[in-house]
Length: 155
Image (tube, rainbow, N blue to C red; front, side):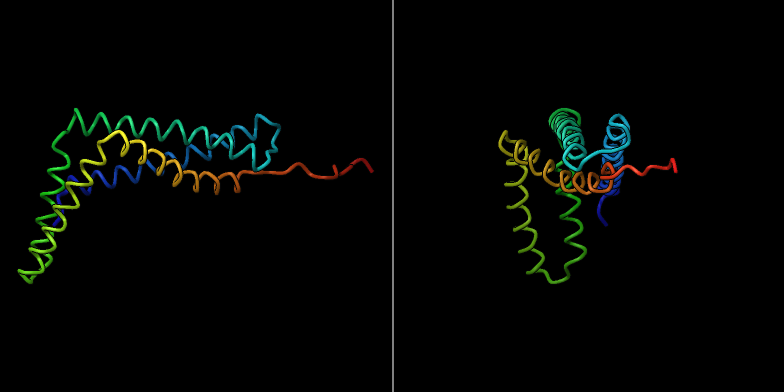
């Protein structure tokens, strides 16, 4: 089985991402209330996108600090857990050895790339784009157009 530490980190990441999505809704609704209860899609997405840029920057800085200083052996633990999982899951010796060797090659390449400047910037931009899609959906939900004709209830 995969190390419980890796699973726990995955669950924590999912929970924090759900909190980030909730904060995007909060920012959009707060901005709509500031504008008198109505907001166009452009204004809603603009507010949410600024929140996305800030949230993803904080996330990227945290990951960099965590992987470089707090737990520099994280990648090695993950690699060991994945190799143990492959050894249990793949019964055929030849296929297992081939899969583990391919995994090791790809893993080392991705590990080196992930901690490089280019990898950090690419990861940041990728997560901004992914969260931007959720932000756009939130903006679609939050938008509330001003009525074209104000109803006159004074009959």
